Image (cartoon, rainbow, N blue to C red; front, side):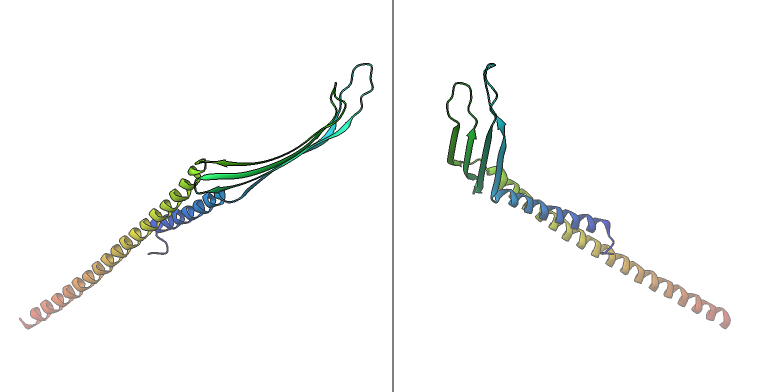
Length: 168
């Protein structure tokens, strides 16, 4: 009865869903690495000048990690752009930064706790359904035993009455 009961199967699946939701939420709290970049040709000129294309590139990386409801992140970008009109040299820039976002990751922490609670509710539902099924199975078994006894008693009564009819 336990193996094929749909309520138990549903409760088991809900427990698995809660477990996976917790893993997903915890994964969002881990390290996150974002990369960005491009490379191409760019240039500018007046109508009387020839177009001189130069390589233009950009690279960026950002690493962040949630820490107890807040986020700590660090980023680095490296730009090299082609000369624009009115400029004599290419523009290069390297920027490093560190940022602390206070209380900006509380939702992620709440998601982990919510997933744990859902998994706990599913476990309790499973236990409750299992106990209910066990009670139903026992009641059915006891009902079967009672019916068997009633049939035996009825057979004995019939035999007794047949004996009584033979004697008279």
